[in-house]
Image (cartoon, rainbow, N blue to C red):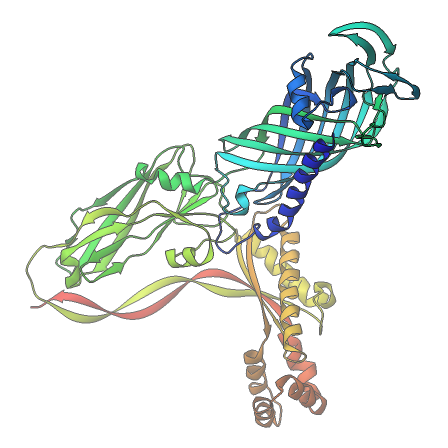
Length: 590
């Protein structure tokens, strides 16, 4: 049995050696999005006794060889678990099982009756309930995370308990019973156990795993089979003083996750069809190239948490002309895109373009390469931003249309025209104020009640997208002011979510530290007598924060009227803003 212990300890040491590495594997910039989820599982299979009545030569392998000579014992479990990240998980399992076995030649004694040495004993069905809490480690995901990997190797180790009732012990003659030496125990006993093992997992579908598990269970008792070994004549010590058993089980796991398989979307991107009207593109008599890009997405294709960015571009020899991107979002994405795609129905979506003709368009092709990513709280408008900020896949470059045909060989000249452009710009709607060095909204109750009322009016008007910019006044240490502004951002967001109650809103925010620009502006617009001298003193100081403190001591109005306006969190919403711009277009020469 010493060999059994050596093998089992080795397994435990390997698992414990792997554990520190798993923390390294949990994160990475722009790595594949991690699926964290709860799951339930069930498994069942064979129980193998490694106790005194199933301890043969060749260590644990001898136990397996003789297992076929006894009636197979079985076990079954139900469990619930949680996958914390790429590598580490935890599960809680409970189950029931049976153990039996026999042993020839080696001298044995019944527990509690060490005075009588016996040979050729058999154990008739010890039954047990067990429960254990296990840590699991996905070895393959330590090196390259893939939630869709078909086969995974998952060692586990845990702590638990066994609640057992020992079976009857008989004297054997060959394979036949010749009398009962110890009756089955009439009541159960409780002891601890330490399960350690390995699981081979087969990913059948995004929510289903089939697995084969081998678990070796250490126990804290030698009474599972009511029998103990006597001291070896050669070694003069007890070879094994604790009973052990193992299990080989087949199981099924159901995962309560919401997988967003953007790799599948990329692989099947050819199912998306594109039409361009007209094709080839045409430049009209006004020097404009106008066309529609029509995208048809099939049913049951677009994942509910996915975002697709298609950025058409006109490719010509020596360069390309980028067009406005088109953003498609899944039905459960909270952010806004150009089009929202229903998973079950798919749909057809049209984006209209109108560009000024330039000579390079005459020999070009309209191209596109869809890019997919999982929504993480933010919509990235360009493919460069997607590549810089999140994990993505691409569906492959596609030709959408041929280059531009000029309807008439007219000569064009440049002409400067004005145009009104409407863009969505952030507009400040309300401000939360804070006391010096604090981030509690309740400290400035009167002013912040006004901010609360303004926020509720925005909610009633149907506004759901908000941005927070939080600041600190420029006295004190710079790092502290940055942390203070971050806390004020968090406090404003918490207050807004509290007021919104069940209304679904999206808030982005950031702390910007100390607000020097507004401080200088407020001083310049104030009625302070020496405001120019104050600004020069602070700007020329090697320690501006200390200079502010000194000026406040000389000019109390700074502390009373100026600095309180800087301790704030401003809330913005995006509104359409019209801007008159000049641009150059091509017009036919008369």
